[in-house]
Length: 422
Length: 160
Image (tube, each protein chain N blue to C red):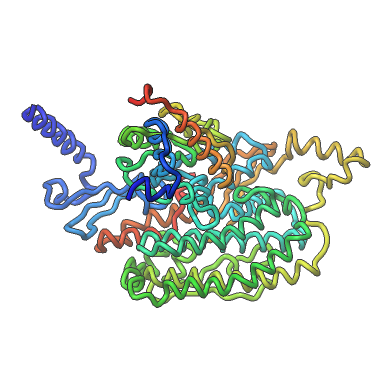
């Protein structure tokens, strides 16, 4: 029996060595000779933030090579959209970056509007900004909680999710759903904000800054946190740019690039806020930037809340070729009924043209490329997502650090596998 | 010590092995620390402060399947991920249960395409299906309590 086990393990060893041939050129020769160790991290691993698989070559505890293996959450969203009319494709975009569905809605809606040359009324743009900034806070809260758990601080998640529930409650008020609201639509938003939204938002704005201070009290000067984060996972600005990194991961390296400032959309140019920048490009700087972004989002939300009271008017485009008429009109206007029927059955034709438009999501630049056909379905829709870029930079960023630093680096570039694989 | 000190002056309580074991199994079910997609975020919400799964003895998520007895498949299951989930299920020790959380895990949801397994029950047996895209934490709690009812009705003759 023992012999059989021995032979079995020899056979298993032979198979494994055989498979190493596939890795020649990807890992160093030392891994093939057995001098360094190959370690498989994921796709089932609590710290890879989803179903990312990393093949790590380790010299002792030091990372020699890191090979990301993606696609464990490839959902075929882009292909599915090709078979749907423009409006009906929207709910699929929610489910890409599932930590900030509103940003995906916005990226897609902005691209469709650009393709159709459709204008959004001022109130619609205002409500969008409120949603996007709330989504940024909600996404960063999940990041904060999970990143802290990865690094050994268990309690932060409980605080972060407490506040996140309030944001989700507001999303539910707006759209009827906690996460996947499909609220931001081409031409504006689904409906106007309900009456009790503004007091709730103000209550949240009143409480939240103190909560951010609480998170900082737990982490910012915490010596263990600083030991784990400072000087770890340093990304040089040129590396970040070369890999197309965006968002806090890029700004942590000191590159001033925020699409809300660089290519303002939805009226961001009219808000007063600043873009926090890091100096060292390490995990700690990226942490500080996201904490600062909470405060900047609060600034924007404060201004937006004030405008919500004064800016009145339509919340979505009144071009009924592209946006449904008000429900109240359906009982009185035959034309409205025809528009409504046409929109929900056929949709609308979009020009045979290709466009790209991008917005700043909590993770970075999320861009949407649409190639229309002249009919009601697109020929191709492609999303340029920040998580994909960030994962592609992991091999360079993690080289030379310890295995335990790997989870800190993954957490700090804030990847979502749904965003990467789509 | 033991039952007498816990029960005060209630005297003797009679029960069956079946009921006692099932009561124990429902009271401390250890879920696998496992998430696939959007539903995993709602699952985390259920774990966190507002919904607090530790009320049901479930605060301990085990990252290794060998220490877990509940697999909550939270999210869409891709064809590339399916062998991994099957292996995780196989590595769990008996008795084990599976909750299919959300529409994608239950039936493929909105993704009827080349990439998504049309329901996790194509590869592993499922005890409770929770509908929703994603389900609210309350819905997941309801699914867990439904599973508890199911476990409580298990018969000693059926134990493997």
